[in-house]
Length: 290
Image (cartoon, rainbow, N blue to C red; front, side, top):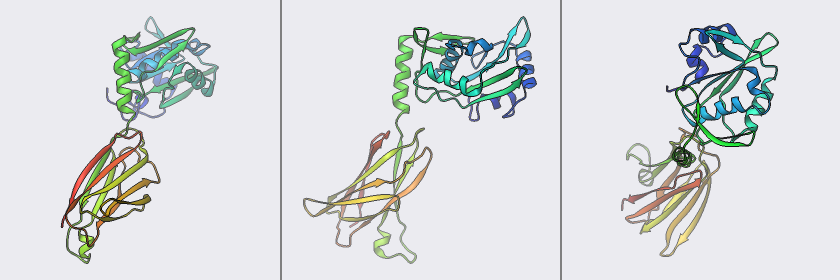
């Protein structure tokens, strides 16, 4: 199941279903629970809230899912067991028993007599694995076909590896040569646009772009996206560092800088290196026209 808008919308075809819609959905479902759905009675959130936290962590560690708190199905009959705790208490108890904290898309309260039924929409985590910590238990769980099961050593190891891959922003570095012609000067026609794009799932922060002239390459650098510090290298070559002012968010792309070879610069190369917090380092080398 691949979701962009969450499990509540996927299951109920609306963002805020009524309690009757949820009861009808559970009644008509062939299985009480499955890989993406778990039902919990009201007492499951009461201290230490182990049953709910176990379900939430297992969904986060696998493909995500929906916990319906305050609703159970017994012998084909759907029973509402209203939760007395408010939404903030439910959220706080989940946060206290799972490490690292799980991102929950939504905890939607549905009014019921003497309380609420809660729809807890859990996406697949970008920071796995998540450990259940309740009643002396320190375990990682994943979702099986109908229930939450402990993760094996190799599964935990693979989840930590995935965390390492997902915790870095993949910054795309492109160099776009200006097209000659129009009203631009010859110098402007030789300019290079430095374009940065974040192809990852998390913001790229404290981005540093270092430019280094090689051979006889000398240049000027301009940017409206950050601060530039210039250097002079041995051999009278140019170097500069651009520090972006703001993070680069997922799927964002910016024309970070314009690099213009100086008039007295002959053929050479410019090495461009990108680094930063949560950033996979990358670089390109660009030839300048003599």
